[in-house]
Image 1 (spheres, helix red, strand yellow):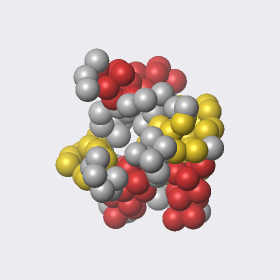
Image 2 (cartoon, one colour):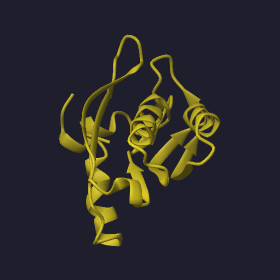
Image 3 (spheres, rainbow, N blue to C red):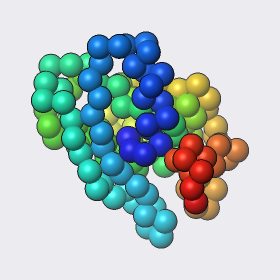
Image 4 (tube, rainbow, N blue to C red):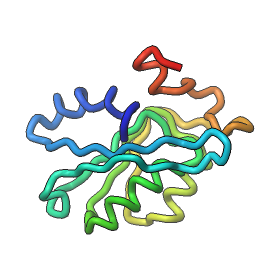
Length: 133
């Protein structure tokens, strides 16, 4: 998922050098906390492949859900979700909406703050990665 997921892409490509890379651009509207999709380009043979969606965090699960729905709408069914930090709310949402999607995470945090960010979390992963605000 653009843009923060780019920080994980090179690591995945080292593990799976023959992988093809697609991009799904999604950001969270700061007022509504709803995902806004702005870009999608996936490999032509994605329906035949195992897909790993990479994004550093699952907070509310909105962006994750939106990305998975987009892939399923394009007849992709072998989907896994990989992140660094996941919050209970987001994991619960993904598991309730998609019983066929496995989630892989390095850390699990229980709570979100009033803005829907993981506590303690990492802050905004894209901003941290690219030095933006």
